Length: 380
Image: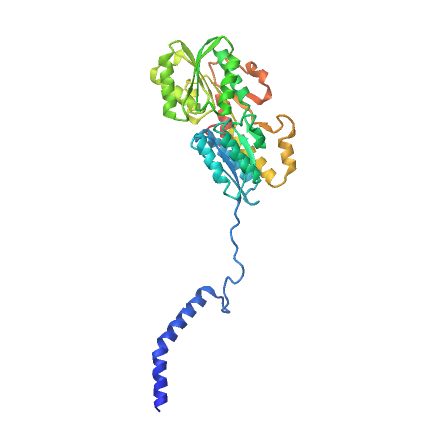
């Protein structure tokens, strides 16, 4: 009798623990077991696959790159990058050479990056070239877009996609000398260490010839406030100045802002590179006489297309894009230029630019706006 009482007492004392254990086991089975009591995810779990990344690194942030981003997006859709396990995007630099060096070093630690296409902030910076070379040694595809490396560093990259900037400068100079027979001019640009800036400014000077006098080249380090200050300063400093030349995309609005504020539009011929949304509006208002417009959409698209083809062993596409790869200049793809003029009241005609061949297209502002609308762009 005593043993039975003691057993009953022990069971009573242990009951809460048995109940608690049962509740825990029951809850585990409720959320993690199927109707047979086996774990619902007893098989191997499907983990998201890391995409192989194609990176386009620009020199500094600007609306100019908006069209390039659209080109990247369109290439990703057309080529079905995601389905193939790839992604493509643009990374923005801070406008400094060191900024690009640091980003390239970071890329070297990221194993998912298969291609880096860069618009070098400096064409001659050995640290940029060295980091690109380090990436290439790891098997990363290296290219340039928009602006190239100096010839001594070009062996580190496989290809260049973008404007023939010497021709671009000559086209702008040809527009200037057909708008005005002679005069003094100043060229405005962000950095003169970047290859595209050097080539455009030199091309312009060559095209206008000895009847024109260059008074200055003003740098702004991609600072828009400084770009505007530069225009104000040269207008005050050079009383016989008659031609204002914008080399980078934001220089056009900076020039127009100052000229408008000072009410001196009649004194100046204004010719610029690129077509920011505001600059397009300003040409429509009669404030810009000619724009040489690049194709950043094509730069973004073709850079991704090549990197993807090379990464996947698509030799046919590589051959199509660069049929002369291996020969002198065979790894350069020219994305073409447009010379854009106002719809009326301009002396500029298509025949004036025939010497540059089919890679330079003469269009009026309305025709250019229709082209933008076709690709859903607001700038180029």
